[in-house]
Amino acid sequence: MRVLKKSLRGEEGEISLVPESIDDLWHLKYLIAPGDLVFALTHRKATASTDKLRPEKLERRPVRLGIRAESIEFHTHSNWLRVHGVIEVGPDIASYHTLNLEPGSNVSIIKRWRPDEFARIKEAVAESKRPKVVIALIEEGEAAIGVLRQFGIETASEMKMGGGKGMGGKGGDRRSEFLDECSKELNRVAVSGSKVIVAGPGFVKEDLKKRIEANYPDLASRIILYDATTMGVSGFQEVLRRGAIDKILEESRLALETTLLEDLLREIATDGRAAYGPAEVRGAADQGAVETLMVLDELARKPEMDGLMRLVSKSRGRVVIFSSEFEPGKRLEALGGVAAILRYKICR
Image (cartoon, rainbow, N blue to C red; front, top):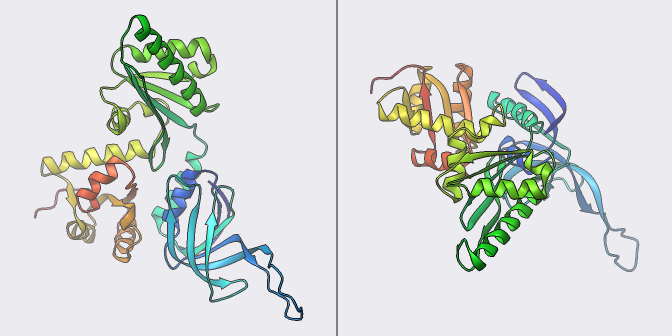
C-alpha cells in the first residue's frame, strides 16, 4: 500500500491510497465503510447528442467519481474490490454506480477515521515492504503449497502421487516424478524474493529440498525446513503457531492473531484477565479495563462496534481486527466475534 496524500483535521478528512496487491484490497475492504465518500477513476457512457437523427453506440469514457458507499464486496479469489453507492461528485449525480478497484487504483476516502484504521494503513504500508512467504507442506505422496496473505493462507496448489506410494520399482519412479512435480510447482509459486518454508513429517521434506537444490538452486537458497505433523489447513496453522514465520518476518498479522487468540483462551481457561461477547466486553471497556480488543472483521462495520473500538482507543487500548477467512477468526467467532484481554481481572 502507498499513501499519496493525507488531508486531515483531527480524525476527519481525506486520505489517498494506492493498493498494490490483493492484500491491500483486503485492507481497503475494512478501511471503507458504508457512509464514506470514496473517489476513484471509473468508466461511464458519454452523454448522447440530441441533434442526431440516428442513435450511436455510446463510448465509455474514464471519469473520476465520488460515491457515497453503501456496500463493499471483496472475494479472495478475485483481484477486484467493488464499492457500490450513489454518485455525489461527477456526472449523473444521484445515480447508483459501482467502483471496481484493483491493484494500482488511485483511491481517496473521506470520512471520520478511527485510530485502528490509521494503524491498519501503517501496517499495510509496512507489509508491502516485506518479502512474500510461501509454505509447502509435504508427506509421502501428498503436498500442498500456500501463500501467506494478510487475510489467511491462500492455497496455491495441491498434489498427490498417483498409483500408490511404493519406494521401489515403478513406485520409486512415481515418487521421483512426484518430487519433480512438487519442485517445479514450488518454483512457479515462490517468485523471486519469496521466502519459503518446507514443512512436514519424516524425511520427505529433506528429499524435496535435495531435488530443488539440483534443479532450482536459487529457490533452494531461500528455503527453511520445519517439522509439521499434519497437512492441509491444520498444517498451515501448525506452522504459524509454532513460530516458523517469525524466523522470516519480524511481524506477521496471522502470527499475531494466532498468538493473541491463544493468550485469550489461556486467560479464559484460568478465569483470568479476559472478557468475551459484546455485553461483557462493553462492560470492561466502560471501566477502561481493555488492554487488547479483538473484533471479527465482519462485525467491525456495525455502529455499536465502531463506538466500542473508539472507546478502547481513547483509553489507550489496542484494537486488532481478526480475519474471518482464517482459523483464529473462526475461533473468535465462536466466542461471539468480540473478545478482550484485560489490564486486570474483573469480578463478575
